[in-house]
Amino acid sequence: MNENYQKESMIGDKTEEEKKIELIISVLKTKRELDLANKNFETAEAGLIDYYVYQIKATKSKLDFLVSKAKKRGICLDMIEEIYFRKNQVG
Image (cartoon, rainbow, N blue to C red):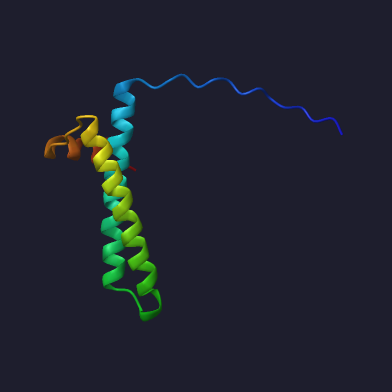
């Protein structure tokens, strides 16, 4: 068998601004996931309670990591920026 492979092109490095925006979007998405997990936990049936507890703990750990990473980079999100990112970037 003769298989042809297409060579992958190198992806250019992201600028610091693009990395900052990506991190902010990740924080906002994770925050939304945590809110959803909490809401699901509140209405969960008996068989799903453990699942949502695990999901909440895992998502909280992820959010803590991302917030810590953002703080180390000196990223601070005020309310207006958060609204802008939610409206324009976060799907």
